Length: 192
Image (tube, rainbow, N blue to C red; front, top):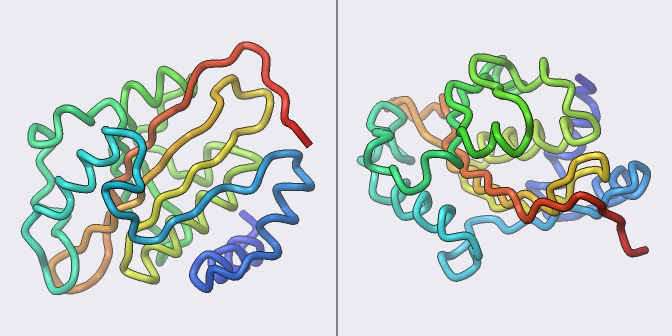
């Protein structure tokens, strides 16, 4: 993990002042992700993400945020295949997949359950994913991101909402993430 790059991306996500993130994605040949902090229901195109946001907002709260201990998969059944539940590790520098939705695994071609994000070799997206999760932890806020994966991945896009959960004492110990793939595309190319 390149901590300096993750830290720089995190700072840019928090400040919403972007320079390194667009440069990085231009270098790797992928469009810059779209970011929306604290999106409204209307700003989320995917019904699954709207379901998760409503569910998260309705959870019993700790000091500042919904409680991780109150998450009940049965209550978010319509979104389950698209849910990732991540434990915050190493003071927010890494994340362990407690749950990795079946629909996500099917589209991505692997199941990350039980693994650390840093173990998955998700280049070139890993620094952006780590920074997105870290920014939500540091800000105690939620974020929407849409990214276009590298051309070797046959999914047109991924829409993700990152919803922090707390431990009851104000610390963020888990993230509830909805991750919805766009259309499957056998052949992809980017317009420049």
